[in-house]
Amino acid sequence: MCLLESLRRLPYKIMVKLCETYKAKGMCPYHLAFKQESTERLLETLKGGIHHADRLYKLGKELGICPHELSLEVAKRSRVIALSYLYLLDSDLRKVLLINMDKTLDQAILIFDEAHNVIEVAQEVESTSITTKDIESVLTSIKEIKVGKIARNREEFEEFSKYKYAVVRALKVMRQLLLEKSTREEKLYSAKEFITDFELKTRESLLIVMDYLERLVKTAVLRRRRPRNMLSIEEFIDFLNKLIDTTYDERYVHVLSHRGDTVIYSVYCIDPQVAIKPIVEDSFITIHMSATLSPISHYVEICGIPKSVEFKVRPVYAGRVKALIVEGLTTAYEERSEEMYSRIADFLSEITSHLDCNTAIFFPSYEVMNEVFSRMKHIEKPIFVERRGESTREIEEKIKKFKECWRSGGGLLLGVLGGRTCEGVDYPGRELEVEIIVGVPYPEPSLTTYAQMKYYEAKYGKERAFEYVYKVPAMRKVNQAIGRLVRGPDDYGVVLLVDSRYKALMEYLVDWINILGTQSYERTNRILESITSIIRKFRQLT
Ligand code: SF4
Image 1 (cartoon, rainbow, N blue to C red):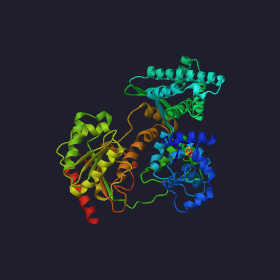
Image 2: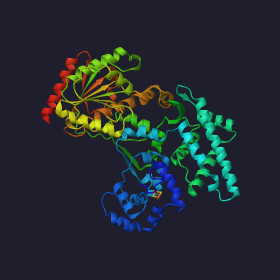
Image 3: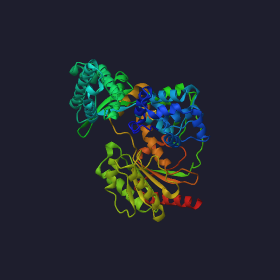
Image 4: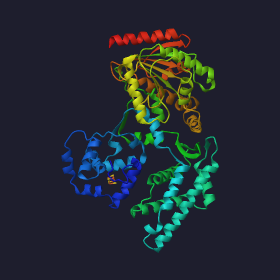
């Protein structure tokens, strides 16, 4: 929504922060133009109806006034505002937005649509990281600042030179520290250890160095000598602030890891309540909507919702998805082997080669998918495989081609649970009739999941901890995948849950599907008969 060339491509949070400085100093022409316009006249131009962001942006651009300010004015006068819940979960953004929109949470009814994503988004907004490459980029930008160009007198020159020297030295030490402390494996490196190590090496306080950095950069921006890589600098400052703020907070862990030669230092939030609870407590009421929150009591406890009432609406497609558990196969870590992968591949090859409809197979990870797919044989139909790191356009193209295959004997789509082929995509009608979910997508073992387990054990007890750290996130992905089959009253589908462990996970499955029972993977013909007869019946009905 920003028109200023130098800010408009920055992430929203950073853009908003810099925008405040630009406005305060009268440095943005679009803001000045907006202030000279009569708000009432502008709103009259818009007339009634729904004011989409696109429309406001277009109008702002045409008139040469700030669309962001215009949208905030519109929001001030609106009774219903639709926005990504990311803006509310992030406490900094929330504060800025609420003030600018002239709203308070205690008078608001907040509706979280697709609430099954809230927990993950809450943890994401509270987590952050930097890499040794980011530090190098900040270092280059700081070195490029010409003190002689921003200082207005001798005192300032000496002061800014001192800042620059201290910051450059600090950045070099930080980079070196991360390289020295990291190992090939993931490693915990607490904020307290990092700050102590840093201050021992530099003989400077981290807070003072940050203050120097912020003063130097702010002066450069205000004196129209904006450093080249502003994004890296702002993200770096945000990271250090988060690191300091979470030093003694047990709801966060600080982890060193690797990507090739690059070291990553991360602050992970392990308790989503940090972001969710303040909103729930401050709002007049919150409504959380989803067709895949099962069981709801877990969601309520994880989010820290103090008091809740559950309303159930039976979906129009209830009963139109039939599921069968296939036992004798598993992707459990301790049972992964060449033999198990071959067994799964043979089963999938046999089933899919006999189906004449669009079929999707979703796996717990790319690694498992590749192991199994490389062993699958005799499939004479178009196959589309989701690959790690593919561009959005490539994925969309694959999905589009796959969807069209139902007209010509069916295609096969292979993807990853929680990935882009199975979340946020709809496959209505015959675009997808059979879904095979291979394995249970439990989170990979990592220091973060281990730390979260320990933290949840202390908070909820051992049993609940395992449920909340492993079962609930895994089954959220499974339920989301199942939801791809049905979007309207005429949709239907068959799901094969290929892993013996699903027998113990029934209570976490959405309650609008029919579980037909359990069948051994060796009884392929029986399974095929079940699938084809269900599909035939549904096709006759629609
Ligand atoms: S006032 Fe508007 S155009 Fe100017 S910096 Fe802020 S968002 Fe961008």
